[in-house]
Length: 117
Image (cartoon, rainbow, N blue to C red; front, side, top):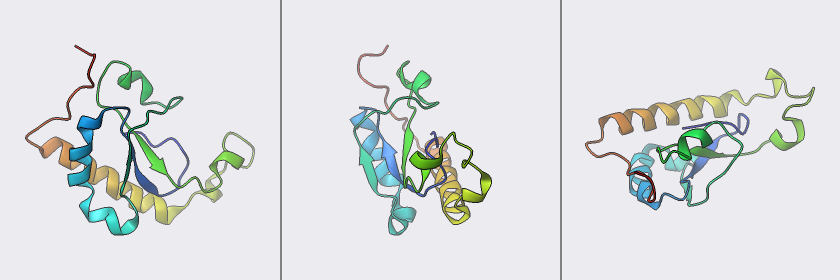
């Protein structure tokens, strides 16, 4: 799981063209639906830290996030800690913890994308 688009609240996950992951995330999202964590896109995204793993077929995903002012301030002199959304980061940390716990405790594993050994 990768958070690379600022401090905005998680809205869901890009599934990296691995539709077999959807049932897992659908089951694991339940405590956070009322907080807006309910979007799962089949798209893959690039230029983030998860890509190296995804290219090997490993289950690696990027969160869909509220962009806030990310595209206006990212990698500029305005990219400072004062712009962090602490409330969103608290929710995001709970979502990451829940997904990590569920992935570790699930009897099944997210299948590797087709086309990989």
